[in-house]
Image (cartoon, rainbow, N blue to C red; front, top):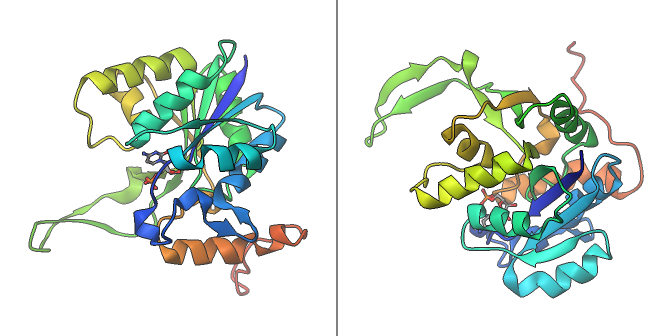
Length: 239
Ligand code: C5P
């Protein structure tokens, strides 16, 4: 088994309002994308990395990658960017991890869990967390229609791991049909009828979308940035 990682970093990051691509925004002196690039590059289970960059930042990110990854230009949608990454992976890569650059603090343990499940022979593996808020379905006027049972709901993170041929087939199908409501790779794999297995994710693998998320990442990344061991948040005496 040869594992390749695709780090998709070609989004515009409009909701962050930073005036430049989200993956290039500074987090303690390094672009956001560099955090997950380092984590994947240091992981012993990952052999090849492709970073999918905004087309005007390929040179900048190639210089920043310093030989740790191949950098290719992305596309208009996340799906297009993943496809660009897939095409750039060397032929010997049998399994693929697709990771959002917007999740810079993903712990190596989550990458290890996804890889372990691929080693166990699964076709598609995603890290998830339970839903902790109460979820309501509302109509266009904001009137509650139903309270959804959250027990079987999960929020989904990356890296998502796949057998390469399964992911390629899923993307091919996704391209042929309209799949605008599908926002992740596992959704495309589900759509071709393949089984997707979940493994535990991590609260640290949250996605930076808003300025608040960036603040949170900045605070959480502090200990790493200055060389200390990351610590778990205090529980305030609660156990
Ligand atoms: O927009 P969103 O935050 O859901 O994007 C998730 C990830 O997909 C981000 O890391 C973003 O850079 C990437 N992306 C991409 N190409 C696009 C759109 C998003 O690589 N066209």
